[in-house]
Image (tube, rainbow, N blue to C red; front, side, top):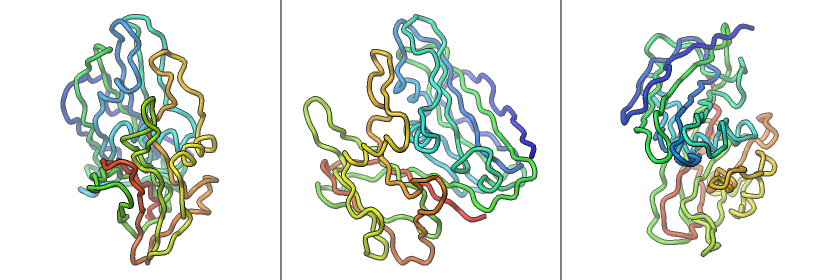
Length: 298
């Protein structure tokens, strides 16, 4: 097979703006989004670099295909590829160049002709990147974006990834959140607001379960600390080596995984169901970020 890798944005200076581009019309495996900058006097942390990209959204004729904040995209990269995204030059030298690269995926694997976004008409598929000006420990921020098309691919499925903010429910305890139906759920990613630290062992979401037509399905009870232990199965678990990055990033994120072997055999099929929901046992009355990854039939 043949692929085409092309440049859509090249070294665009960081600014507070929304960058919009039409995507190529061929079947799309993934996009590559990179942010580069120079350090001021100390190491720019991952959190600071991620903050320059607020949100990434891909739509087809106004219908959302992918929408999430940069922190959730980073975490989804960890889940899909089993390792942290590229972050170059973990040193403290002033004015040293740094680059953070993120994959914007349309399938669980890259270069998969069976699972990628199908061919479209010109102008149908659009990306919007909400950015902000470089500040803090970095200067001279620039963005670049590239696309990978799979020539002649005729996919049967693609991956849809949508983040939503679950508002504070008003009290601790059970909080039912209803999920969209019709597709197969690959995984549910939860980025919690409160995570244990020096002063508290409380999780914003203490545990979670999935109910399909009011019957527990797969995840009958999943404690946050046990979901955290699942990282050993999902990604490398060693912390960064730099002083300001000695935390096991993504710090506050856990996954309810329905594709543990990456073979599609355990996906949660919601087609024909009356109701699918996730029940979050809130340890803190606060908002939570949830990203649902779905496999959608073409």
